[in-house]
Length: 196
Image (cartoon, rainbow, N blue to C red; front, side, top):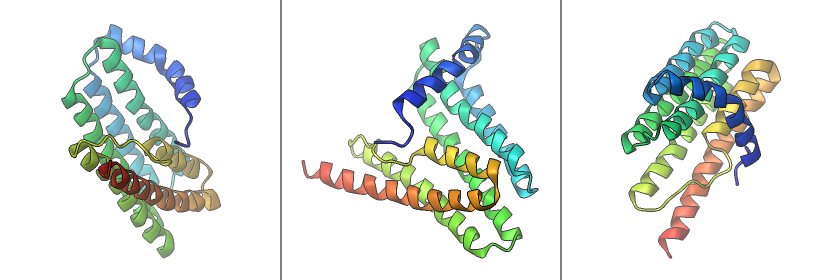
């Protein structure tokens, strides 16, 4: 069970549908959209470090949305491939890491030692969530379980950035705890499945 519902995903899919249609007409490769999303999120790091969190939050939201656009574009054009999925996941990991590193720098310059450490914990958690799935699938176990995946992490960061202050700090507690909770969920899931 995930925090973001299937209904929410369908609503968002409906919103981006015209954009996907335009990209189809223009024959834009899905990988170009993937890279665009990464560049947008990487750009947000400058504004995070500069303390302009609202603008950073908007860029993170737009860049993160590209993750749904590229997948839907590939499906509509009938060009889904194993390398395309790998390419998407590869840049997702870089996007996640650079954004969180931006916040790590932001908190460190504010003298917020606790939240600097917490951001580091969140980075490790985010990587472990992805690693757990990749390793499990390498062993032949499909592992999509967990309450706090990439979509949930991005939305939490966006809300924290847009509101700032206490909301941002709460967001990073949620990020750190939620990421590791999901990692543990996946560990337990694979452990149970491996005994079947």
